[in-house]
Amino acid sequence: MTVSTLRSVAALNAAGLVADAHVRELADVEAAYVIALPEPLARAINPANPRDAIRRQFVPSAEELDIRPGEAADPIGDERHSPLPGLVHRYPDRVLIKAASTCPVYCRFCFRRERVGPDKGEALTRSDLDAIFAYIADHPEIFEVILTGGDPLMLSAVRAREITKRLEGIDHVKVIRWHTRMPVTRPDRITPVYANALSSETKAVFVAVHANHASEFTTEARAACRLLSGQGIALVSQSVLLRGVNDTLEDLSDLMRAFLSAGIKPYYLHQLDAAPGTAHFRVPVEEGQALVRGLRDTVSGLAIPHYVFDIAGGVSKASLALSDFERRDDVWRVRGRDGEFYPLAD
Image (cartoon, rainbow, N blue to C red; front, top):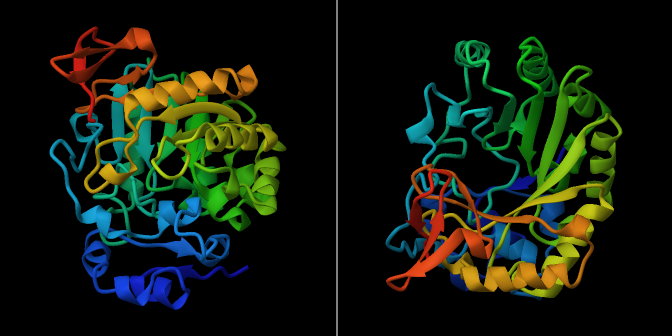
């Protein structure tokens, strides 16, 4: 199956997703940040609704040129904890492999937006991967390996299977976790062959499915999730709290129910990272807390995600539960795993 992808402002304009009046002002956005929107996902957008949740996530806006103080190209500190190209070792018992530098679709709020895309990132070479697997084998404290990118499911099934096999050969690695948007953005790529490539008879395999609105769960997306779970792969969710996408109790409740209906356990709800040009998506922490409290009164306990924030500089994730942050000198601060408090972007 061949799926066409809209990759420019001109293509979005031709598809009726960008008005003629906005084409010129979006030229600078296109020059700064890569665009990709698969046509099946584009057809799910209601062109008459300027607040359509899929449109807001994937169609560029001139607001992306508004760079605020505190925003950074590497907001969660990957580079600080990268012992090898493509590898991040932030926590003692797990590492993250940036297995791909491209995505099927580019989120307008991506925290790696300065580093992903055909012209920005570089795919890992075989020698890069050999060095990464040797590092993991030499560190017996590593219990879990997380595959990310870009989107790691941009790899071929053959490459994905090779990674699975290499990790199966390292005894102290017990968990393999893939983070992806593929089931909801390009469900046609989740074939029985691909699902089998991710599965393992000796390791626990998890796929974290990133979605931010219930409308992303088409019939095809749900079928893709069933293919994965049918291979014994556990599915968990990953979402970002976004202004104009899921910042109402109704939208957030519908999203968590959509995850559960697709066989996905809600896992993480992220406070937006301070990537350049993303302030228009940011929801204040107080609102996020109120939404999560509202979820507890609205949906099953199965549908409650962890509301978290990645502290700038790569310190750690912090829970945004009341006990884990404070307001001092008119600034919200969150507690890292080192016990210190760090400022949270407003």
